[in-house]
Image (cartoon, rainbow, N blue to C red; front, side, top):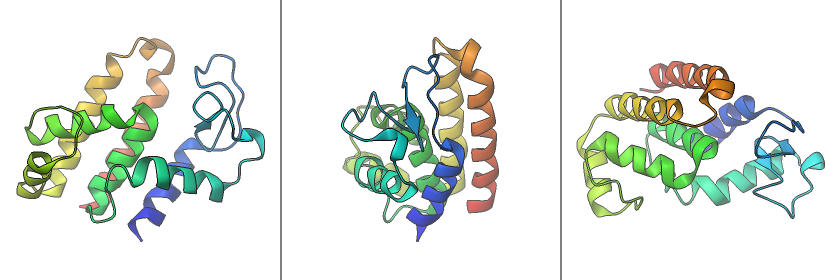
Amino acid sequence: MNFDICINRLLGNEGGYVNDPKDPGGETNWGISKRSYPMVDIKNLTKEQAAAIYKRDFWDPLQLDNAPLGIANQLLDFAVNSGLQTSIRALQRAVGVADDGVLGTFSKQAIARMQSHDIVMLLLAERIIFMTNCKNWDSAGKGWMRRIAHQLQYGAQDV
């Protein structure tokens, strides 16, 4: 059930088909880019196909099936927007463990010791720090901040 909630939110953020030459991802549909998925027919990608890709390539590697909704939603959106390793390392910094990019025993124990709402807020802070250091902040920052603002709203609902 959490996957359904999170994927609907994510797909709402990502939107439909675009082919903006300024976007480093190039041709994109539902947030799935031709650059990352060269064998996918991006223009004709359905919502259901996009959801299956996100489940396989993001949700499952992040081990979100048993995560609280607030954490699952934040981590999925961050990973899709900035990459799996970036999101995992940010989560690890948020919970105070070494940011090695592996969701192992120490990370899971640290997550279990903290309140979900604290993790959500700290993870969003890490996300803002990361985004404001990106080289294309000047051109894309406004859109990223809108997206993070929506994530703050979801964070308040989910905890």
